[in-house]
Image (cartoon, rainbow, N blue to C red; front, top):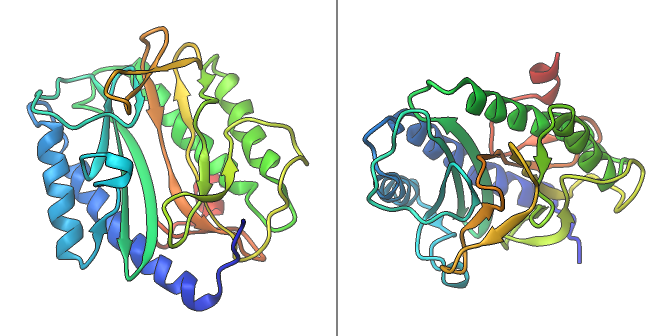
Length: 257
């Protein structure tokens, strides 16, 4: 069931988004060759708890960490570990927190230390896919408009749009209705209404969109072993352009102008 949030509820989600954005910005600064993803995980948990929140990924259906840290061919749900990051690797960080009962969910990808133009292009295209999808997230449009915008841009570069995972509704629960695919046809699917809160999260692969799950029961990898990138924000549908709750103050129109 899709829930429409009122102004008081959106205000609480806005505060959760502010907290999460601050945490992820601190993680960005920390990422460099030699750092471990386990260190980033511990840092994220500490910062979330210091901000009065709870890392809602930790313990979610048995997931043992506060962030998902996915490297190179790992699309999502990678386990943080003690392996030191290397220059040129593609790292995706996905984190969810809960503050005063309300969730925020966001993800970003970086090329560790730079040095890989091919990986950097994939990261840049994935991020723009998000903003093009968000541009379609307006009242009266459909979920298919979002997915089509993401798919068309990614595939124009010959990239694969992962179909086995998608964005989602969000509120008091991490995952709520509706599912928000990163592919689709315009004017199809659920019609968007003011007060709907969703995540848009393009997962874009350099090669095939087909994926496998590892034996840990969580980590999703590309079937051809090529890199993948992930970018995500929580947003609320309004009468105008959407408000990006996990990126305070950022406007879709400013990014795409």
